[in-house]
Length: 272
Image 1: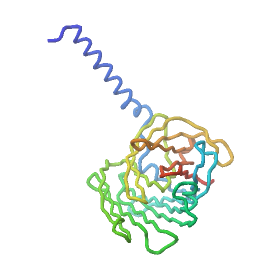
Image 2: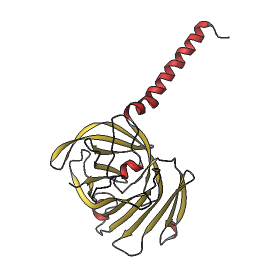
Image 3: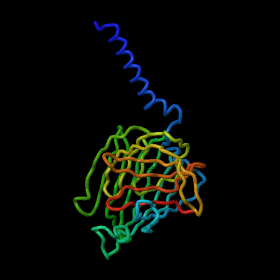
Image 4: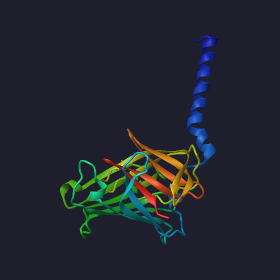
């Protein structure tokens, strides 16, 4: 049997470990409240469609931004109580890849139409993304997603065999689901210190990434001809990818988002 001193040391170590666990993983959520979920970001009944500029940052400070496309997002309330988040995105591949090893003089317009439906419990039920080039009637890629049995099932179809596949990814109920090219309109109720996990689906590849998000600080950004106080949300995709979202502190509107994208730093910014 351990000596009395050894028993006291074990108890002290256990107490320190317990305090550390509570401080790191439990206390922050109790103090700052629950993170945003699918229903809270979608339930914006009276909002008109939101327009966004898609830009490439040519310098790390985000001072030099080039316009490469546009996006429009809208939330619709369905008769069965579900919410439907829709987005229409287009960008010019020539402008997007300008200055990279894949730059080309032949510009191609890429259109991506997305929607995701959120049921009354706050869980997504299905989503769809359709990718077209240069306004073609036939899609280059179509992604159909279903959420069932704690999994996301994605079926991809396209004109060539490489673009036809079915994949499954684990999904925990009520986990936030984002489209990589469909900007989030709002994230209400944020507080510094909140942390959560989300799933990000790429409509261009069908890949689903697990993102760890944290509201790291308050920050001022220049938007609509004035300085605006925001919450800065940092999203990390293991092992090394990181992106930020700036959410207006006063009402939870998302003003600017960084989108992880190969070779360039893509910025999606709300238009006033």
